[in-house]
Length: 90
Image 1 (tube, helix red, strand yellow):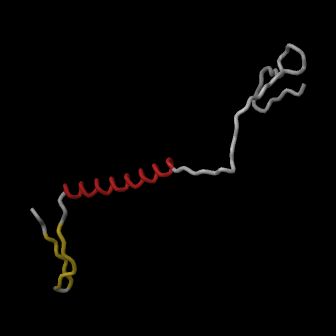
Image 2: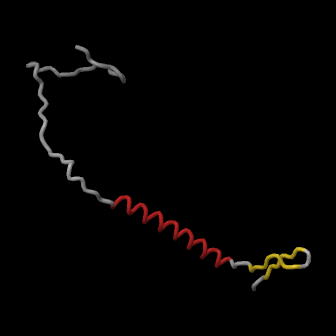
């Protein structure tokens, strides 16, 4: 069933239109949501797959040796009942 709506002002038609069925409203809503989701997905994908090259920057791996140089067998740092911002100044 189609319903025709006619709005008149002073005896002449101002606007005419048809009501959309519930199914067409749902399909239109799904299409809009799908288009927005696809646009967001493409933007996200492009942000995470972009690559650049900069030949001036380089890095290399190495090793770090941390040793106790005081010659003793005690710990380098010992705090008893420590709370945030406590320090050992021995």
